[in-house]
Length: 114
Image 1 (spheres, one colour):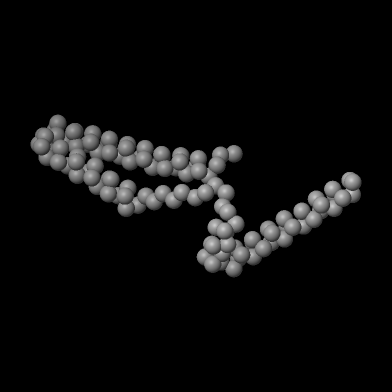
Image 2: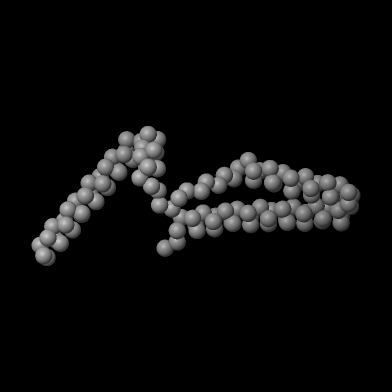
């Protein structure tokens, strides 16, 4: 199973690849227009630079990368409790109860084996 960080890295690389392909295709379109005489070479260069700048601006405006520790600390969980819904908190309570029960059963099994 891949980690969340690896999946995020792959997703980010796909986005960058899509932008690169888009920039490449737009350059091809501009070059084709120049060949057909619909644009001058100078207009084509200006248009291509403008497209590159627009793509970079869109990436800056729309791509946010958040780095999250793979294993949150107890302090981080406690700090984020205020941001959670009642349903999320109830799910955490249920998971803690389940873990406590499993730990108790594990302790009883160890005592019985002794």
